Length: 433
Ligand code: HGY
Ligand code: MN
Ligand code: MN
Image 1 (tube, rainbow, N blue to C red):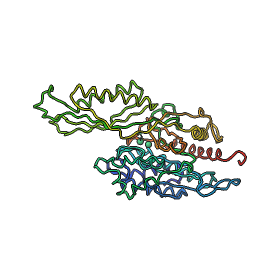
Image 2: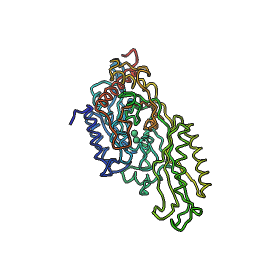
Image 3: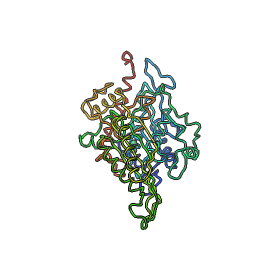
């Protein structure tokens, strides 16, 4: 086993987390599952190894914390605000091992590297419990709880087995009526920094190991339902059919056309057909839709076009078109204050300069838009957020072929550590330095 805090240790921990999966043929770990509990236990142990005190909050997020050291001129007091480092521990079905997990483990490694460094703020590491929204539909449940944005309407969202979120809370050993206890007070937070694989091709194309995030795309998710008429596949002439699947297929290709024209991203990730028999014309088709855009306005305008297209197709084919929104998160700008610290970290780690002064010009490192969503979208409601991106091979993510180079993880560890130190310097008043 590699030394704690090294890139080898980080990669070995990501490998170990693949053991906590609900399927034998790949990685899947969803919110409030036995695998979620097992991963929390393993991560909490690593947090303690790195010198952090640990706890699980009222929404199932796992936290590590070390108190502030203050400065000679301003000794720390208990309960000092914290800089939070972290990411998420849940996955999509048949996932890669780095989306989320790399950011949590890398944060633990940085906490270890800084354990003998006096910091003017508390340092916390968090493993958020549900960023993907795989099980219940609403995403960012863990970070929405931590940012005081829990909506009671979510309790009735049910998983594929019909288990409502409220029931899953109870089964996991959490009290639904105490979920509000997970909410952090903005006054207790210095900022939230997340390291994450890019999940896109830009860093690889530019030959760079690291970049910082400028803006995280705002996403909206829906369930679209097309209802026609289940009929005999042999006895029903085409002129008499109200085939829900054919109508849905027309809608799916129209959605792609509209999204390309709008310079947005739209994905139908799942489609379920009823009754689902080879010799029965589909009477019902249920589709998931994920919409993202550089701006919320552009994304929302595309959604209106999709609704119009759905209604036109439905009318033309004698079926009905309905929709329900399951998730919405605003486009989120990272805070320049944190991005400058991340840029300083990148600059110092990649050797272009050894100066880890409090900030570096944002044009000294590559800033990228993130079409992928992240927990920072929720945490931005209570504190400034910043992100460090790591190159991933061919931009592949949400797939077992997700891959990062050990050397890039090494550079990311140096950059993330330097970013925290840059913020620490910036937190100490000039006269006290
Ligand atoms: O869907 C996303 O963008 C993120 O991976 N949850
Ligand atoms: Mn993901
Ligand atoms: Mn992620």
